[in-house]
Amino acid sequence: MDKVYGLLSIAAKAGRAVSGSETAMEEVKKKRARLVILTEDASQNTRKLFQDKASYREIPVMIYGNAEDLGRAIGKPPRVVVTVTDEGLSKSILKAARENGKQDGENENL
Image 1 (tube, one colour):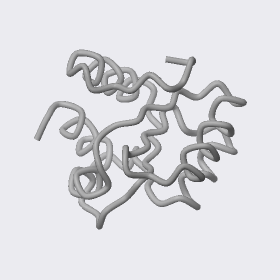
Image 2 (tube, helix red, strand yellow; image 1 turned 180 degrees about the horizontal axis):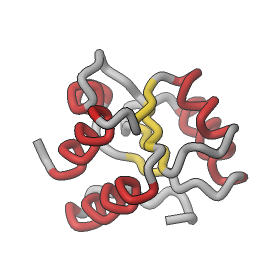
Image 3 (cartoon, rainbow, N blue to C red; image 1 turned 120 degrees about the vertical axis):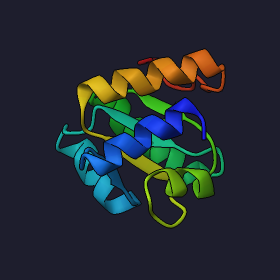
């Protein structure tokens, strides 16, 4: 497991990771999300919806990995979206993704 997934695992255990489209979107709309992570295999509609809502609220969006690995990292079934609600963990995850060179950079907020 790479560092991004390790940090996501910590966020989940601390109760600072919210997964699933509906609950994650609620976190974005209420501005509690500090980072939105979408998987590379998320549908274009899901990507656009989350990117638009997050961009409007100035929440960074990261495209990373696949649904199976993301779900495994947070101890859940496959997930295509996770929001992180902790500022410090969000920054650490973004930094780790940049170091891995796997961060897509589709969102200008990064």
